[in-house]
Length: 400
Image (cartoon, rainbow, N blue to C red; front, side, top):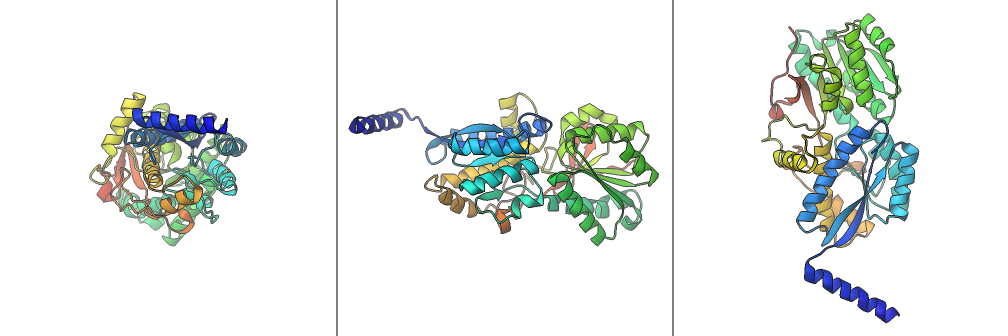
């Protein structure tokens, strides 16, 4: 019987070679596909899916067709359970994910203990890469990048644009209170104080909140000039709507990624309400494309696959990270965890050679040291890159 089994396997392999078919290798796609974070979770996963399509069209990874096994990280406990299932039941060789920092932190712990590579393509919280994990790599920019960029925009663009000294502005920081919002807010405070900014309040709230009127009232009473909100989609919409209803119009609102980068957010609150709102986040689509080679081709692939324009830059940045990782794994020689880690650790993509504009090279904590963010503004219903100048597609606008 053993001889028959070996002969059958050999015959199958020869048949596959003769027909040009590829064997399959499984990777996990662990994102919040349902629940409160599903919209950005799905958008992020689409970038990974496009990368896999492109890799498979070019011959796969190590001669095998990449197949994605989805895991729904609807909450932290589910993220842990799905990571275990992907590893022990589905037999994935690595996991890609996960957009949500809290979900990523929980699930990557499972992968690390199992010795399975985990590639984070979108979560920004500090803790993701501060744990000295061997098998975890993050390709995207971080909460530190976001906090610093926002402060730089205030000092270099916002304050001059509204005719004030940066130190004369009253800054209010509000944030959802998970690892994501807390990390970004902490960096905003640190860089803000270093720049001499007057931060008059910092307030956290649950991302699932259904009423932000008390926060709006407090900011209004404090006469806050610039509001910094780090948020997901629902709380972004809620704040913008309730601030508008209360007649609260600060000189600037600067979102920290999440909901502020999404077309559905603009549709929910209306073009007039979101006009002029700023955002710091991953590379978006209205950008100087000389700075982002391959971006236009990605957009065309997205439209062909999903029948619409991308809903945010999360898909683009997941695509860029996944392409870098998959190409490295192709050169690893095997799918053994240590071989994958060694190949990925050796990635060296210079700045300006990806569709997101930044390069890829891993440093301390296996964080991509070449990752960076950009500043955007909602102008005439579109999210347009306005900072830094080299990537800008338009000038920053200010109300008269």
